[in-house]
Length: 278
Ligand code: PAF
Image (cartoon, rainbow, N blue to C red):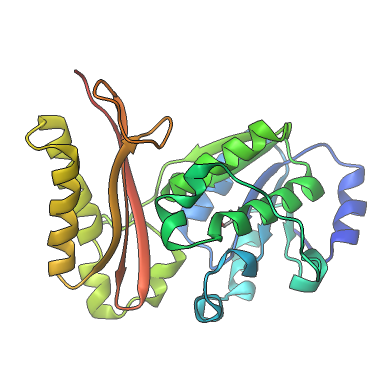
């Protein structure tokens, strides 16, 4: 495994190699990331993983500072599973000091998580474009847990003509249903026990949508009230079209329920995608 710390070296090394499969990460790797890497390996002989905690996508300095940093452990995990290349640049290496160029994203970037984390997806978009430009992969893998991120990355790739295939991989969960996330490590033991409530309530919402036993808006409001009453602070629960991320049409059949809520000081997100027959 070749660990690359600078973009100059990356450019030199990749120049003579065929295009690879790419898995971008912010480190603190868990089973979710390992699944992305396994899928990437099925597609290409060489997989490149990036590890970069991107300051541009955090809304507060505090959130950025407390994000788990476990580079040595991450590298040893990646070595064990025979990843070919790891790119882990410093902030100075990859982010220009002036950073004056912004990417204007579609409206949906300011809805759902974007509404509660202003500028978050613009930060993601900039780092993803930088990494795509430097690595020029043939195919890139992203988790469906960050469904809105995946949606926007597909949009960026299409609208900016990146010749890269974007593949979304299903969320990996702990046995109790909690979606794997680096942020789970920040939960207290008590809150870790409580955390599966997020997925449970989304499953309840899904049943209600399928049964059509309540109007969509009421299903969302009931879930918000319920979770807020159990000690969470809900940002949103929203039932959308999985294709457009807009409010579902009355004959919509591919749906997604997205949610974000804070437990203690840890903000968790999740979603459930499903089909409904009319
Ligand atoms: O999903 C993540 O870990 C990050 O948002 C990503 C895609 C690596 C960009 O920093």
